[in-house]
Length: 324
Image (tube, rainbow, N blue to C red):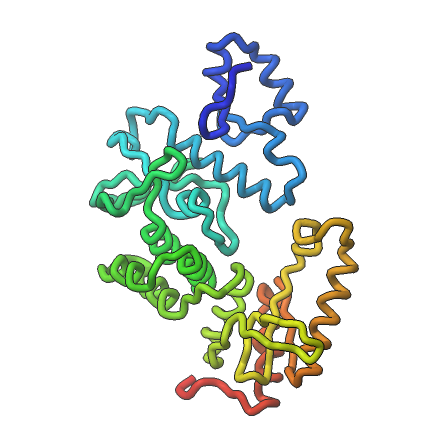
């Protein structure tokens, strides 16, 4: 079988033209030697070995997007212009932006046409919208929208403030400036108000989309916005950085349960070791006089976090912002 291309992709037609037999390719897929990332396009199964499920999904989706961007465009529909720039969530995958609940079924491409609506196929969405030279960058040989343009596109088309805030936080963490994002959001378009609000509240110190979701619910509830990653020098001479700090009185820690699944474990470390270590850390924070509140994914999904957090905040005299 022929070598993979520069993107780690193997295209079925190329393999067949190089002498591979259809049955050989099918057997390789069946045995996990190859993993399909699109119609007639594969990556090496070895690239997924030893990686947690969520990371495997990210690798497959990123490869799927690159495969769509680098294949020969058809002479019909929105692809007729020949411009195939990965955009929106697909560009975010190539840039490595952290998103909240990303849709990894559809590949997003922007045609550069100034007018017209998006054309949605079974697996691909072609967006319209003018693209300047500054809006396009090349990553690993693939044309994608720039980091700032990608952040604003995702923020404006996301279905919730939490999703918009997560991509803005991730973009700021990667070095995009608030001024850049604000300039790209000056012109009216659908979803721009939500995107602008996300930019106002964005914070590069958010460690992950779960923490962004916590803060989004806090903002929407009209509660004071916490300080992120505040440092505490504890009584035993250790240092702790807390996720969300409210006036040095209440601490909200986001506990993404996925970290107990293996990818955050050290050599020889069991999930129970992590649980015990975090319990000890929490006890030290309480010894320091902090009221610690813990939230998990289910608390965010079921809207249980805010009532619990507000109860603790009220006990320390911290109330909702005026006008809420």
